[in-house]
Image (cartoon, rainbow, N blue to C red):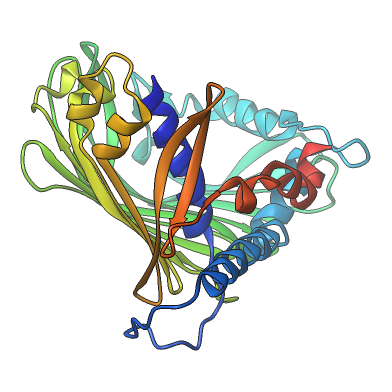
Length: 357
């Protein structure tokens, strides 16, 4: 459906905007209109900052850990056999980590150390948490990696009439050479439990992917109103935030099967002084079997701001059957957003060539 293409186009454009930003010395409270030329330059600067931030991620401790542990040097092919081997050996010695869809946290608590000579785990100490010390790569001389599951609580939920145990609280860390490379701290997780589908109603999650810190907040404000808040930052100045509000047509969560079950969506995407404010009457659009660009644009709105001054609108169009997203500037001129994202794949491949070659 055309509306799905519109959402995809807007998502790609917005995702790049909120993925990173550079430091700005401008006054965030200002709203003086700028020229179209300045607006274009500011958008370009934001995308350049985006790619710089991706380089920061690629150069970070987590990326280095992944490349060292999960990719073969030389041809750089993905290879998780070493990590799988460690996991299989642990379960052979101490039993399955998951039984009947439930994590065996208390029953597996302890400090476990990998013995390279015997190629087996040794439980060195009792503990109320799970700690695994192991080589981050096969044939590495020492146990330079440490995984710790520091806290865990769960609750029973149901999906398609099968019972699962999902976390209501979880905290774990991953270190290499005593440097934190990844962590997850999730709390305040609740569910509306039904037989065939249990809807998450609240969650607070902090994820660290060195050097990024990500904060997520999920809230059910009423039976049909949900909100997602997200922000992230690095010490290098890559910051972003996003707020999304979704209103459903009904609260029969088990029978939500497609976007046609959504009534409206709106929110903001901000990065530095650049912001998108968007809204969509999804119910109206999905009522059309094959909506035209005019019908889509009449029921959606996406405005682009810089330093609180509006610099344009994002609109949907089709050219020779191909989906296009345009930004219409204050002077009425418009530009395909491909001007800013057309080389996206090429630049991503260049940044993450260690993973993609």
